[in-house]
Length: 567
Image 1 (cartoon, rainbow, N blue to C red):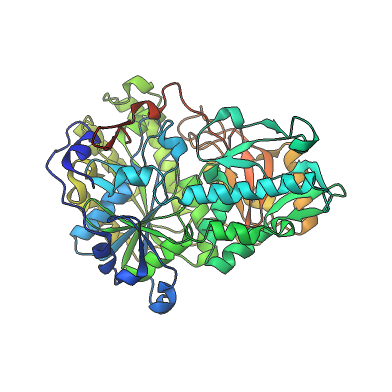
Image 2 (image 1 turned 45 degrees about the vertical axis):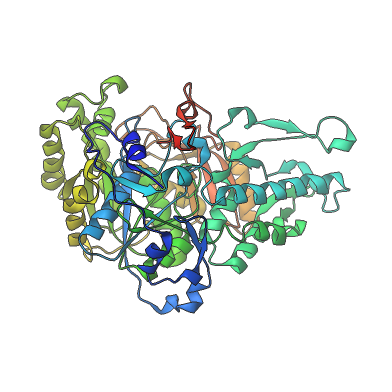
């Protein structure tokens, strides 16, 4: 349970330290959605999984869907934009306005939790709780994904070692291993050394677990049957003759599904103010599709009148992937997009040095508007009304906050509101919530392009329209992969572009809204089980590394067993 001391420890300067309301037993949170004790599998008093049987028990598919509110942000900066905090605070604000609301978020990965980012449960008075438990292991879903993924990896190498009946070419094994930690040492490795008893030597490597195709499948599967069928479709290798080898050929998808049997059930927790929060799945948006599970979102939409969800990073990453991959698959239709910005982030995009982002800087602020403007333009490409949430920090100057509001409302013709949810919780987001509610029903959502466009045309449309690129160049390895996919009949799959989150371009050093550049695609990875291909652009890595001072150095456990330093 989170007490006042632990909340204060995660606060920011200027935040009120009044005691938060006590946590409600998760059964009470579920009851507010119309669920019973029998619908839950408890993980202690404040966490539970929701059984998949609720769909049939309550005939949820026949209920009308609630209104979906999608939260995204401008291009991330070292200052932090507060996207997750804003989503949580907006949910709390809608609750204060008497709305039946639920929140849908992704699960934190241990890699960034112990790396640069720290915890991912919000901050101050806008948090999901129990925060430390959510940030550390939670209900074990990510570990289950890693186990299922690595079981397949072990079976592939064992199959080659045990006679290789399928004729798998060890040089063309596509399936790497994963772990839920940032470890650059494992990006490229050689396995099978030490003689014949230890396997067949070959080059491979590790990705972070949340980049696994198994994670993507978990978040896109409708039920256990769909989950196993998708696992079977995963392309894992090629034979010496160039024929594809799928996971189903290794006869291990049943065991993988067994490892994921509980992980597919959505997790239910709560905000600090007691609103229900479904936290399920964890794909990164710079290297995967970056949104929580469709089971969790679908459940929330049938149980609540309003659902707030967020996608990883900015409008051209998590949001684009929700709009072009998730929405066409599920029929989900977002009503409005909330774009999170901050004074500090705009200073960064205007060229201010990192050490001075908190200082007033009108010149940098105005120059940084280019990034904000591009993200508003991006969201309008999908037919969505946009509301800008200006996440306030205690050091922000009133003049600069007012300048952002004026620019949004007068120059961009979009409503904007200062969000003070970190300091004030839901009350600090009421103005934002009212503007969001006013925009519902004013949009006409649609994906960026028709689903049957070839892969190349999809990448080109995304790069030119959303990134501001002049075109796309493919390195030889990517060209070869496209030819292989075309030969298998997969030349029109959806595309998940993996690129840096630090810029609209594929160069993390380019701030603002860069022009006069071309997107470089260096690799195309098929994710046939997930139903898309991943186009790796620029220098994006699927296994992050730790910084010089990892967040793990701040984490401690008190003699009483309380975890501190995860924020």
